[in-house]
Image: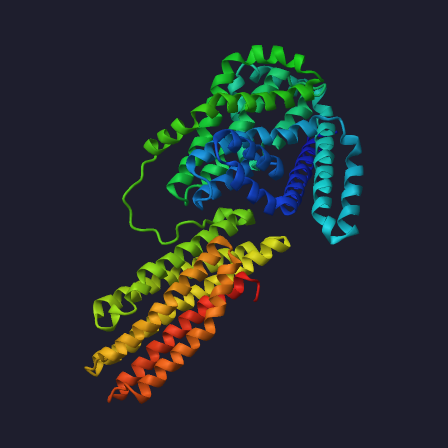
Length: 529
């Protein structure tokens, strides 16, 4: 077999391996994403539980790189604190070793069986498709490993290749660097270690050199997380940097004792492939046990290394483009951003609905805030649209659709308040003013709609259906009140000015429309869309 044929088969095997990892990961995410989200929220109460959560997360995603990017996304959304993220990241490194342990089993000859079983499950019933994807993905993984191992056969008898390995074996740091770079490129440490398995299995690569590759593979996983954190919150950047330092510490601790480590590996049992897989697992377990007790102190240190800077307020706080590939994270970020939007409307627009009637400066502030809300609306809308382009499960698709409706209703509220400022401006142009009676009636309706807005937002934030039902039940009452006040205005307290009368009607109608959007939010929460 020529070098060209070897290269093609090796790259083809790697491509099939990576695709298999992707298919298996997607299937696992679909079959467990909802449960995974609930699990993470419950078990990140302390560092040890957090480490367990990280191990489960990485086992599900089949990639510590993906798991770390996901954790950074959770930190950016405020779902997990920086301190809790430390333990989760250390645990995720242990969880991802499961993949390498599976690869180390001599089951490449049965890869086709996995492919057949996966395809069968995929087409039996739509409910089994995600599980079929998992089995099919692992079939591709094992098939890819088999191709890479077969491609290595000619290299084992190649004197030039053996001499090259012997030459660079005197410089073990080269193995670490090469493995780190390769892992950073393919974004999968398991793929790097799979190549090491193929080269070591009866081949020219020594067990010690393979262990150095294990170190590099672990080090290379940090690159993607560091890149994904560049546009995120300060805490998310700290989490990504901490992950990189954790890996670096592990490599620095193990490097001086590599010869002793290699001598002890045969006692873990199995052949060379199993010993390499065990080396990968032991490295990450020792690193976790070594660093886990210092997570809180490490978090404090990260705050000093990356201190908060006084910057202009960032309107979009939680969403980032890298989370789109993980719908669970992306949807949580969108929800947090919508909570941010609802808070701004409640505290930067609602309090001025009355005072802006006679204060032009306040009206300008409200208009400026509406522009911020509009910016948030567009960011959330495009974020959710990108998520919906992913292959979502039913629950994720339903959640994304609900959030789009929430986003639209909140943006419409801000628009209504802006329209109310324009209506009030007519009074200034005509040098008119509302009477005390008219202001009192506007305040009366205002006092009714604000608590119901708060109730609707509470329902949204807490997924509280009873709160949503309460808001819906108040709608007839608000409609009656608005009609009564309008009637009183026309027949009892109407101003002699038609301009004032129109403005009064516009303001009352604006209040009513705001309340209607609170009702819409409640309907959406209940699935009435």
